[in-house]
Image 1 (tube, rainbow over the protein chains, first blue to last red):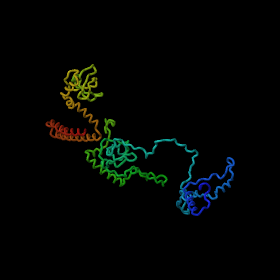
Image 2: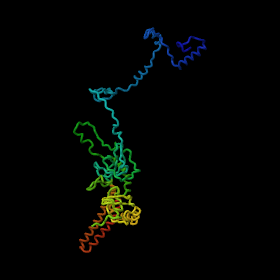
Image 3: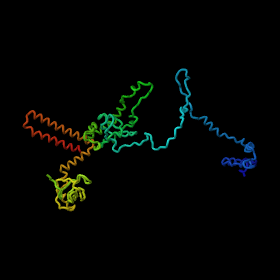
Image 4: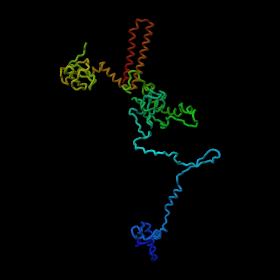
Length: 281
Length: 165
């Protein structure tokens, strides 16, 4: 009975009013609004009895004006990402600052669109490559360096770094090879192993530590650039301390094995009648 | 001219083939090229084997031709061929060759150092003796020269053997 037409009931006795009135309001809040049937009777298909404006009045749309979308507009107006930034500018009579766009328009539109690239899979960047290590190379193995200024020298392997290069040390007092990186491919792994089980290698010895540094401040146009940049390698104190820290631990273990020190001091070479494919390393 | 003959009971060393390096006894001759051969104590089954792959040793066993494996084994063990073979220079040379091939880089270094030391000692003694000889004259020195050399050599040989291991 209450749900049939309109909203409000005709007046009733007071106590009775209050209860059903409250009930109705409460009920309507909880219940889903039931929609009224079409107030525009159909005359023929597609043609209604009342005009647009008449329907506006009949549906009481003058009462139903919603303002919900405004909040979004307010939000957009409030929060938007910064589009410009004010940067200070030097020079006299320049008006100390400029308004600079953060996201700039493209400076070049190609005449032809770049064609879509074909799908490929498994092409990973270098940082995601799988690093492998030969089974014959384990921490403490004596390696023979084959290339570089220390070619032929026998050297102790410490660990493999993140890029896959091997961290290696002479030790310095034995054969003047410092803490250095070596490439796995250019190294012969011998079967001689030093026990490096308890040796702690400082964690800051990474690829970044060993990477060659390049100073590039192209303020000068030409001419003097090639002289000022680092051609000479300079020993830093940090390298010395790291070398000592690692070598002191390793030297103790090398001394335990007879003749190992002399072995590390010597260099490897081939002579007549010596064939590497026949040698057991 | 020929000292080792193919005969029943001759112990032969197999030079190549699947049984390379093992000792066998010739049990019977099949034809011009093949022999019936058996190596009960060296892991070679009784089989025909061409003469070409056999190299005759100095050892001969006593058993009749076509004797069965048990007899060959008895004769082999009676003569103690395995021990006698290991004592021959031939077998020792083979052993040394194997060890040399197995040497690791570190071993080669140790051998090099041992050889160097040994040669130094020998040279040292030689020069000493030469000086003595040049001073005193030629007569009494010759037999004495060889003795200290041999003494030094015997010292260094066990070291070299250790290094070879």
